[in-house]
Image (cartoon, rainbow, N blue to C red; front, side, top):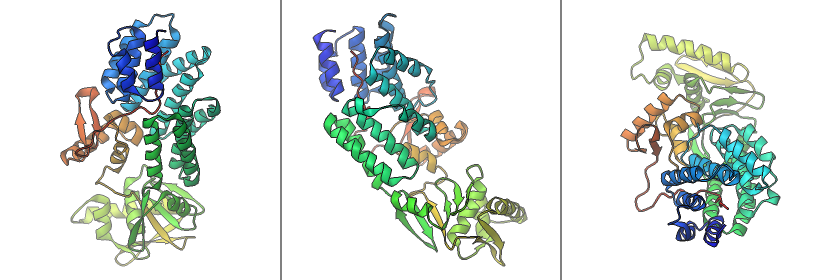
Length: 407
């Protein structure tokens, strides 16, 4: 390995892509192409970076298995940044095994972290946690330790464990400080801000306010009956009822929860559940059917009692009914907007996978949001990506969180 390649790899390891490009911008050999690709990726030129990596992969010989495996890992990271979540992971797994066999433990661990990040994005927390437990971060450099702690924080955030998430972010901040990589420090700060940001709106007895993750965690462990419109469940201290695939029932119980302890008229329930401006006999008949279904699924937690005007919730055990809603809701596409809020560009297929919805449904929501100016799309066909509009005067830069030197 010549001195320029070695120097460029060290620049990437400390998060200096411009320094790396100064040394390999004109190189056409496989190692030079690979390092240029990673530098371009850190600067946000992901499509060009992918092209360079594929060229490097073709140029490396079959005997250069370690270099080829590193290219596969770098390409997988770019695919993750592009939110190509449907991509098969077999090549990445094979590359990780190759790196482990040749003693490249740092890049092998990085490959494992990519698998964990993908699982987190699509909501498979148990699998992500299982893979993360197989890694021992103490033997890794500070940058990898910071990434490890960010993964722990990500799992804790999704499990609504604020204290664990805060402790993991603090450890990540210390590791990022030792690593002295600007992009990594920014990512840790973003995670810290996310933890302190409002996590939900609490609606109770006609009033509402924003609450942080700590309060959400405390509320879910309280004795109250909680209609969780964020996670699509209804729970009390004794039972949890999922309405993830019952949107009409979720809408009805949320409306009744917001009105509690008062009842809600049939007219309002029809308007909320079926989006009908005028309720006719068919709507009233359908409402009776859906209320019957709601009574059946809520039987362990509460009764839906008929009144002269409409219906009301009567909890079996709880003395309070509280509704948790998203901090900001935009029409019928809160899940899509929540995923796009990370600032990355997503394909419609990746959004469908992460939101656990059909691609056709997600595409309709994206088209409606684009028409309203709330999202923007670029590219054509399978390469089309979606993201939130950039703030005027600010550049949207995609920085990969852990540089991958090619030696």
